[in-house]
Image 1 (cartoon, rainbow, N blue to C red):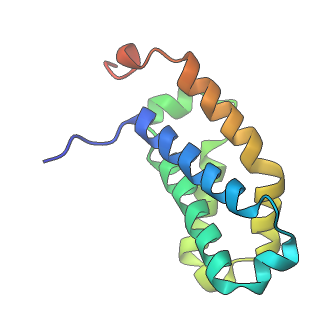
Image 2: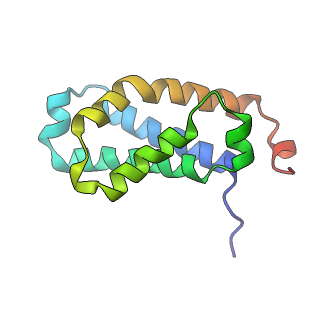
Image 3: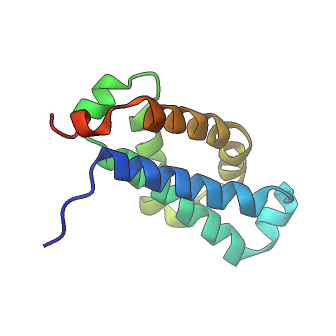
Length: 122
């Protein structure tokens, strides 16, 4: 049996998903995003990964790093999964344009500043 993924691994998943989205959309317009259902679906998929990884962070982690609303991020994932045919491209575009870079910077700071050997012993 594999060792369970811990908070550090979840944060790495968030960074990987953000990097994938930002790299793919850096030259893209909103019209480009909605013009190709496969591309849009891929962006939505990686957005779900961000939400799922946020959802799976430990309660201790979420209670410690309260300057990021992890539950709002997780709820976006729930909205996408459970309302999959009602995903609003405008909402996804807003997240890409406004939320991903600040989230990436925050997660990178947590990854850099945290003593993970000590953290994972808690």
